Length: 61
Image (cartoon, rainbow, N blue to C red; front, side, top):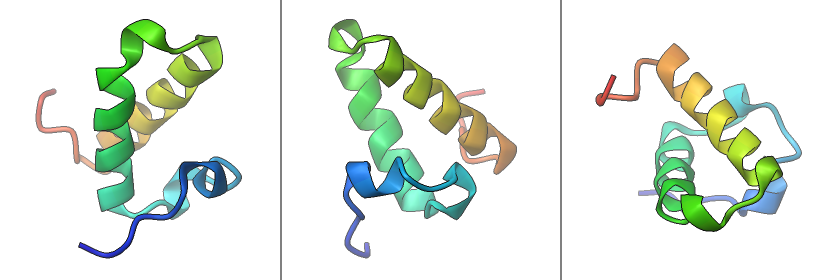
């Protein structure tokens, strides 16, 4: 796996420019801390999920 870019760097760009591995990694990471994230974090998780769905990366759906 290539080196993942920092989350703060990624949040400054469109999810369409994220690598598949980055979407997968940060979706898992945010999902694990879901009970502790604020509304902004939840919004980022929804955006990631939507992008994964649009790319057919989310095998759970």
